[in-house]
Length: 196
Ligand SMILES: [Fe+2]
Image (cartoon, rainbow, N blue to C red; front, side, top):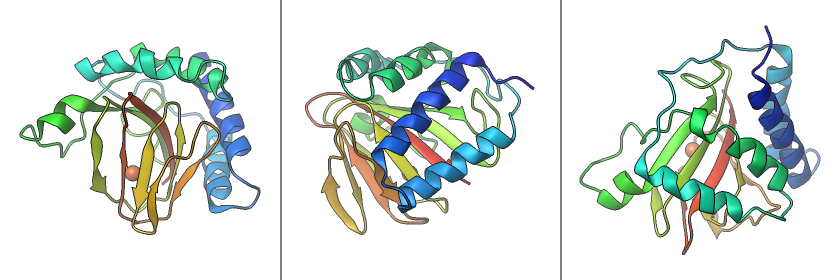
């Protein structure tokens, strides 16, 4: 099976960015290597979800991608930008409509994983966008997780104070740890990579 060329271009840029951001042998590097080794080994079926969909908060994506222009992740931002309108952007399943700031201020999209552009059950790769001034609810999940930011933002976990990894850094969350993230004065846009 052939991988969608847009997805492959994104994965190539993501693998390069993740490799550049994480030191050899670190947990982040090893988690990334697990994800990309699985992607090399097999190609999943295309279009596992119910089709492209946007939410109003997706209007922030363009401004977020502009913050990557001229920076070390411009190639990754461009490859991701080419996929944006083909993705199914959704709120977190457990999001509470009463919490307006979060309900209106965030969206997630799966690129490779259950319901993603490429259907997989061995990994999740996706994106989160948030409007300015929004904190993503604390959550945890069994798989470890690596984040790459495409726009300024901060991350927290139970072992780490709020941290901005910058345009060249990486955030690593060990399996099962409680974690969160938040935007500042501008929009937040980040990619996540989880070997499942
Ligand atoms: Fe997470």
